[in-house]
Image: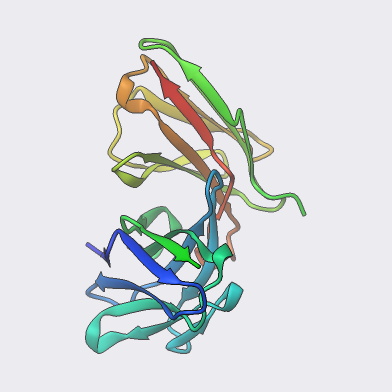
Length: 114
Length: 113
């Protein structure tokens, strides 16, 4: 079974600093990987997705993620944090090829300080 | 284009009651998914409906049920509410060619007292 592990339930960065949110997956086959963001009192919004094309995936709001098969990782980065990036971020993987098998990580809450 | 809409946004029920949550998918989307986001438990898959049929079900008891209507909207019903059913219930939709991308609604927050 495929799953994802998000390291760090809370991450705090200063405004303007690098954002790095970690996600590792377990998969016996090439996975579909996603990052979603959830702002307070809202649903989830897709940031980016990896579907076996380019290993470096660019998403919305300046975020990007790199698929590294050798490390089974799909970490999310942003060069310069903004206050508006404060939210909860979820890594997710498709199990079995259909969206009904989408499995989420436990989430990482990003805090951005002045 | 309207997004995924859910109603009600907030509701409070007492133990043993029943609740119905509603979801309207994005126009053209035929699949609807329900997730439960309970405090400390993350996002748990509940149900998947496609073309009016239940296609898959998560590890939840039978008192969680739902249906999808001909216009692809969906209802989630929870009977005999328990305190631990308190959660944000998220609905998402996708289209057949959507590359497994789900678009989520803002959710219905259920509090069971």
